[in-house]
Length: 178
Image 1 (cartoon, helix red, strand yellow):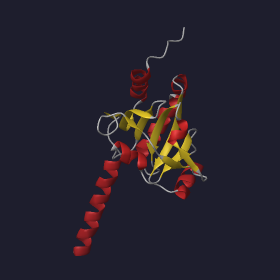
Image 2: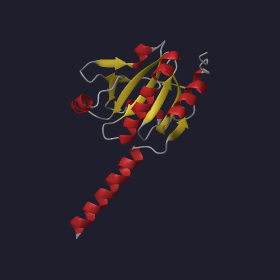
Image 3: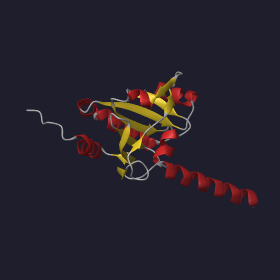
Image 4: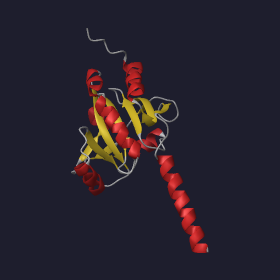
């Protein structure tokens, strides 16, 4: 009896924990850097094949950080949305990083061998970025200005239309092709 109740409790905790981390909705929830103040994002991230990538080395570039995990199905959808907006991201001069959160190199490499990503993949094994920004779920998108300031955070799945509008709100409208 006791073992059965314990198993059910662990199952419930596992399901609620995963759904809390998975984020919610298709528009994402909007936010600044945790407390609403501008924040300079600092993180030393691992490359899947070894080495360290410092976000501070990318000062002078706008960044879009696409936070994901291998177990997160909405993260895969989010990655496809980001890939679909490559022309818009290039127009704004945005460098995209697909940042795996909380997982090790072997798991990430195995996942990427079956599901290659066109973006540069980095790993935030210690969850530095979510902690700095007060994020509790995945997927999440983070926009970073050239000076390293976080200019926006969206938690949950963000649609193509919402991401495009967010880029325009942040960096101005893209001129229409004639």
